[in-house]
Length: 448
View 1 (tube, rainbow, N blue to C red):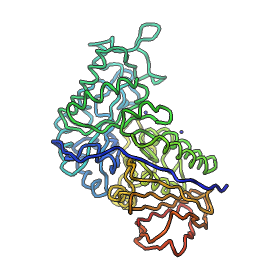
View 2: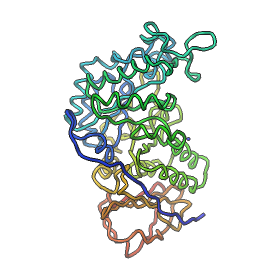
View 3: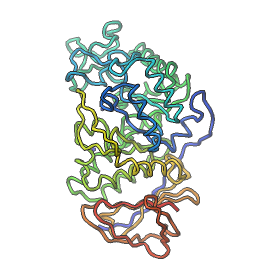
View 4: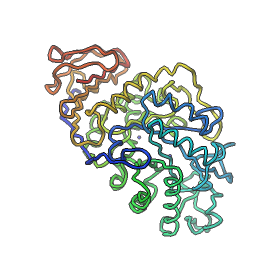
């Protein structure tokens, strides 16, 4: 629903993990979450049809690109009362246990999930627990499920007048919400939830809901909150959002703020530890529509920032159309199909990064066996360089975050030995020199 300094090593950490099996997807989330990535599907804008059936045809392409987990924006019916635009917001639900007819029907969704599982994807759905639309079925059957304003009317949610807030002091409402979540797991065998505005809902609800819903099967849970601001939620969710990084990195580029602000923020995120992970991204449905495309926000450092999102400790999160790339803001309440072409010029770029993330043990997210070291360079005010290590496996990432060419060298004993550039497959022995000559927008990623 924001100088030259010697940088010390940052350590990154792990949840214990064992490989077990379940009935649909072989691995339990506590194993696959360490190597996964998440691709957000805006079904309405993905195809002209905007349906589950139409999206199915795109899944082999996404599999080939290295996508592991598909996250579908809300698939429930949209409230018509007070809706915005001609189609309304997908985050204003009219019923928690039905399908938005705009997308198809329940059987269509089940078929798509089964096909996704056959191809090796995990599937998670958006869950909007804080609020509903004005004509949600509960407004008639259980009006006591909602908060009321001073006039006794449904309480509008934080200035967004198409949605009304639920009352989490009502224990019966909580039970109904949990049963609704169970419905999707039982009926469609999804693998988890992306919980919208998770920190707008009392943390003890999520503490109550997760074990209850997981009586059906173990799930992956990502919450829309920043753990730096809401640390208590990190005890419940597998992953959270890096909102402060998103906003501060945009300010770094647009306002020419010092790079040290970002490296100090990364240290704060690393200090959280690895009982949970962060999701790193350059755009999503909200950012694209309301704050601008990733290219509007990051300009010449867009690709280096994408490399960062795929290689730092945590989970890469991609949005529909980034493989094009998508250069337009998508409408939120109207039909506005992504302008697909047959070239997908960024697909190989992402394929290289996503496959590296999934295959190299040094890029496992939330694993205490992995350490992440910020490396000292002769241009710490322009270059972000880091080394991730897991035993003998190492990945080196070097990013030009300046708006100009930079000649520099890495001055850090942690970097040594022979590496291969994952993009052009050239080899480099860093015992023979650590100099670089970067153009604007340059990045290099090496594995040992």
